[in-house]
Length: 196
Image 1 (cartoon, rainbow, N blue to C red):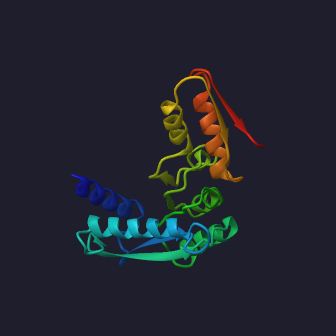
Image 2: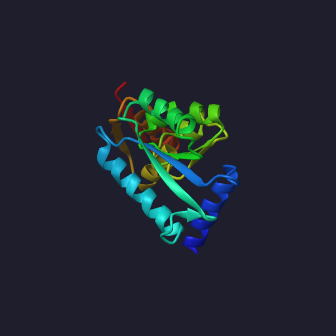
Image 3: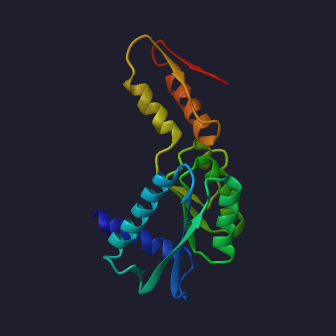
């Protein structure tokens, strides 16, 4: 059943990308191959490749067209990620893009997908902003988001407690703290402290 759903999604993406006359389906994986999230990025790439191989029964083809994965390194920098996505869509003629692992880079990449009118499948960046305030019609998410994390954390807490948060000072951290505070509001006698 899972394989059928993955296969249907791949065929749907190919059709949506207008690939009727194309010889190859180009998927750009725009992710932090280098930098502090390198290990996480490697897992993301391994998962993408395994998923494509599974969905295509090892052929790496959809409707007889070869799938080509183009790797682009964001270097864990928003401006580089934005430029790499533009290069993937513009120069490499990618039909669709996947990534990034960093929420700040994800937010920076959103307007590029809109400009090129091509799908950006956000995985695994988590910030709510990606499919919230900064969302556009070309953005899809396959991973959890900050609100889901906050609700899950709040659901596990019992009794009269106080919570202190420590988070990164960019979209991932800010959205995560906000989501937790929102989830804790009106749920028992719980307080959440944060350092501005």
